[in-house]
Amino acid sequence: NNTTATDLSFGAGISSFGDVIVTNSLIDSNSTAGANSVGGGLFVRSADLTITDSTVSNNTTTGGASGGGIIVANGNLLVMGSTVSGNSASGQAGGIGFDSNGNPVTATIVNSTVSGNTATSFGGGISNVNGTLNIQHSTVTNNTAPAGSGSGVASYSDGAMLIGNTVVLSSIISDNTN
Image 1 (cartoon, rainbow, N blue to C red):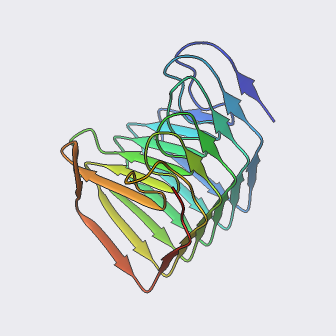
Image 2 (tube, rainbow, N blue to C red; image 1 turned 180 degrees about the vertical axis):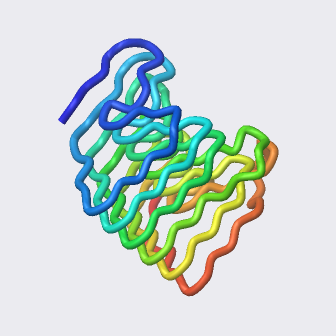
């Protein structure tokens, strides 16, 4: 239950520029506020993030920023057997935000639930910009973003509003709203 409230705040719960492994944990009710703040729950840059059997919930970021729950830039992301729920961003990526920044990195979500997250820009549940996104045996439901902006999943390639490099396997993506 941490808050960072300055411009360019990073990861109120966890902020790292090195690899992070989160196992059997709860990251809940953290918030960043201020212009360009990111990652209410977790922020990882230029490194890899692995979340296993954990819950990331009720985290927020405000000030037109991104990544209410999780934001990973320039690194790989693996979410396994976990729940990302009830997070919000006053920009993109209510639940999970992933941006490759042009690097060959991948976000993989396996046997997990992404539910009840909200973004005011795009990617209510999951936002992928320029990376490879794999969703396997997971549920993405009841997330919210503006019309045509990927309430459940927004996956863009090279900044275009097109689905890019996304694989959905044996998963449920439903009941997301605008």
